[in-house]
Each structure stands twice: as C-alpha cells, then as structure tokens.
Length: 381
Ligand code: 0WD
Ligand code: CA
Image (cartoon, rainbow, N blue to C red; front, side, top):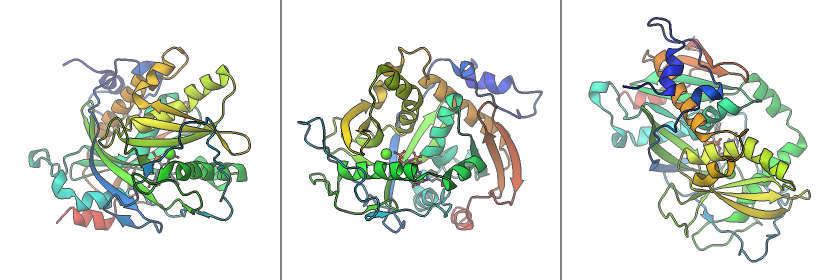
C-alpha cells in the first residue's frame, strides 16, 4: 500500500515503535492530491430552545427567506435591537460536547458498531464541526492557536475544545465594537430567515442566541470515520438540492469591499474559514451580507461551497483545500497513534500555537476530563 502524505508526515516523526511526539503543520508537507472525503450524510438533528434546553427535534430549524432580488440594497439595519431586543447566551457555561453526547446517547442503537473492533459506536471520532474547522485551517492560521482534548472511550475518540489563555483574554477584553459586530451577524440571520417554508422574516422580534438548530453528520476522511454536529442557520425550501445537508444555507456578514486588493485579502483570510466550515458538513451555499459603515447591508452575494476553490486557484499565495484536508487526516492519524488507552477519565490535550508543530500532554482525572458520568453510564448499560 502506498503512503499518503499523512502517513509520511507521521512516520517521518517516528523513532522505532514509539508514537510521534509532535506533528508538523507546514502547508508544503500536505500539498498532495485531495484525500478521500465521503459525501456527508445527515443522520440526525436536534435543537436548543430559547432557554438553551435540548430537544431531539428540528423545532428550531429556520427557512431561508431572502428579500425579493429586485433592488441590490435590501435595507437591513443590522444594529437595530442591539440595546433592547438581544438575549445573549451565557458564556460562562462550558457546554463541551454535552448536547451532542445527549443526541448520541439517545440514538446509540442506530449507531451500533462492530463488536470485533471493540467499538460500541460505529465511528472513530465524535466531535463538533467547529473543532474540525479549526484543524482544517491550521496550516494557514497565523493568529489563534487551539487546545483539543481527546479521550478514547469504548473504541471511539471524543474530541472537545478547551479555551486557550489567549482566547480567554481576548473574550474578556472584547471591545464594544466587536460585541456589536457579533450581534449584527445574528441580526442578519433574523432578516434572512422565516419560521415556516413560506413565511417571511420578522425583524421586530428579539434576537436570542440560546436558540440553535444542529445537524448530525456521518462521513469519512481517508481512513477515519467521523460523526460530528454543527449549528445550521437555515434550510432553503426552494434549494436546487432539496435534501439535507445540501439544502442548508450558511449566513455570514462581512465588511463591504471596494478594491480588488480587499477582495483578495478576503479570499485569503476569511474565505478559508467559511469554506472549511461549510465543506465539512456538505452545506452547499454560503450567503454573504456585506455591511456598510452605518450597519446597513449594502449587498448580498451567494457562494457555492464546491466552487470556492475555483475563486482562489488563480492566486498563488492563497490557501489550498487539499492542504487543509490532508492536514486534518494527518492530525486524526496522529491522535489515533497517541491515544490508545480506553479510559473516559484520561485526556490527551493536543495543543497548537502558530509557528509551532502540534504537541500534546497527558492528564488523568483532571480539569480536562470532559466525558460526563451520565454519558459513560448511559453507554455502559
Ligand atoms: O464549548 C465550546 N467551546 C464551543 C461550543 C465552541 C464552538 C461551538 N460551540 C457550540 C455552539 O454554540 C453550537 O451550539 O457548539 C454548537 C455547534 O457548534 P459548531 O457548529 O460546531 O460551531 P461553529 O461552526 O464554530 O459555529 C457555528 C455557529 C456560529 O455561526 P458563525 O456564522 O458565526 O460561524 O454556531 C454559533 C455561531 O452562530 N456559535 C456560537 N454562538 C455563541 N457563542 C459560538 C459561541 N461561542 N460558537 C459558535
Ligand atoms: Ca452563520
């Protein structure tokens, strides 16, 4: 069997049979053909209500309802309601994987794995989509590092993020401007979504960030089977691809651009995150609302996720989708080689900072343990 770039990256770090201690992130090491990525399949859905309570249903799913496309300026005021109609999710609660684990526990029969592989669930990894997005963009990331905790439990690797010291500082020192920009993203969703397939948006309502709809996806990257969940903004009842997850639409806001240089910078630094986030779960469209300086939406633009690579291909200094995916496959192989003891209280904490390779540390029954007792018990009976 021929070595893939991920095998080589891991092997080149290896001395005898000892597992490698670090994983390089340099893009050139992962510049190889696009790896196998199975078409993502939706296997479940759940919702979080206005009080952040879990429901095993699609009750919070919203419907894409863009303004009639006649005028280029939709007349959205993204600042409206910031002071008087905004209910914010508490950021002091660490939710970890809990909501996803609740879904897994309730659907474990459907996920039954192979007894002979010692796998209770038929997946190698369980995680949030957002954690994988961070892994995908790592070879090109120059600012933010990450901490990913991993536990092996009954044959499946669980991956849960912990906040880095620097991210915590940034969160606590967020400027008023940045807080308002975050709100504007949610307000844009409200202007673009309705409660029913034929409904119209109601921008007079409260924006409540406790609410969310999540899709649960199964797929495979190279030799790794994955089960992950991601928050989805809305579904398009008139989508050319009617089935989930392709019918889902990701909504984004960004500053209006005025020059080719600004657009190139947007493609290089922002589009990589948009692409990775939607490509992973097979969300086929991203709709951008471009913000003017006064907080109005100047223009809408739709991107087809599968065509984004064509937009960036011309720019030799740009990121490559294959590098992102090959690195992710290599990281998952690295995790599999390092984490071999099946124990829900044992955590390998993988850490990465820009300019360094990925390293890890080992923690037993510490503040990093993240699989809750109720989950361990639910899967032991
Ligand atoms: O506990 C944690 N460290 C995290 C929890 C980190 C990241 C996400 N979450 C939660 C999310 O709130 C959500 O319930 O996990 C669930 C699913 O997340 P995901 O889809 O895997 O996360 P991601 O792809 O990073 O974000 C999707 C959306 C965001 O949309 P934009 O367009 O901004 O990418 O989930 C929302 C947000 O709308 N979201 C958050 N909302 C409030 N606070 C947060 C957050 N920290 N993170 C994501
Ligand atoms: Ca969004």
